[in-house]
Image 1 (cartoon, rainbow, N blue to C red):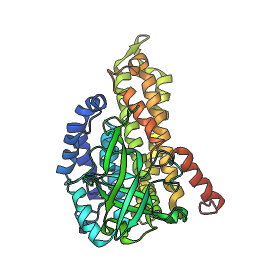
Image 2: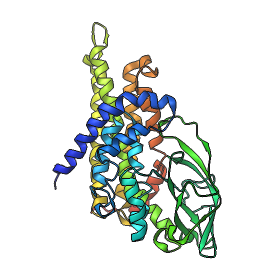
Image 3: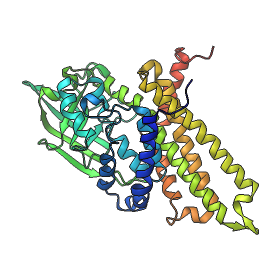
Length: 388
């Protein structure tokens, strides 16, 4: 059992740490207030090659893998969870193409994201289908060789700036999940529109949007894999494979929150001494460290499993465990770190109220904590997850 990072992984970690300190940290508070997509942060990631970590070398990426992406996201999220999402969005819309796309599709679309030439978004959630992802109402109807898409997608991260989206729609309404197909849709297509930008509690630096498809016509070359009915599987494999990276956002956020609170506690005096000398406060920090380290191991293990090709249904429980534990840990640690600062932690003069708001998003996105427990419980009942 190997716990050491490779030389390449350490380099990626160090590069992300440097960019996080130099470029992300000074912008984090401003991004939260402005609620505008941080093109400068995106370009900083692009310039050091962090956008193509999960994209194979043959298609313009580095092929470094999901663990490398998790390491980079963790470093960035210490200062800004939204900037960690910017990195995650280099993988979320491209994984369906990596998993199921044709060679022509991989060659055409993956390199654009890996090199920063194009931004993309992943479109699954709809007004009437969130956790029940198979209940899509968006339709793709065959018209000659083309498909005509009609429907609406909600809460789409990066949807306001995407050059293309990967959208899932029903091509056969009578076949349940097997009737869902994935499509690559350029956002300059006639009939595609951004209907509105959401007003969010946290992670404001990456806007989410309502996207509308009104008689959007796409050619057969934009059907992912060139075969109908494969979209649901492409979407689920994508969510499975990236759940550890959502967990990495939680780990990084928690590390940043604890570090900030610890530095504050060393300087803040009460009862004649720094509050860091009070055992009650010390125990809070000890508990934070315990939770962070447990979550980190689960996240790294989950990412490693994905890189070993273990992200299918029979492996999903461990990926769900990593995501659920790390994101719930982030909420708890952000809350406790804020508590250490007392009234000051509640104020926008300090980043902890932002960390707390941002952490709350993580237990919802890419499968709620409850959905993760459904996956874990199913694995136990079906003896996929066994403790001999």
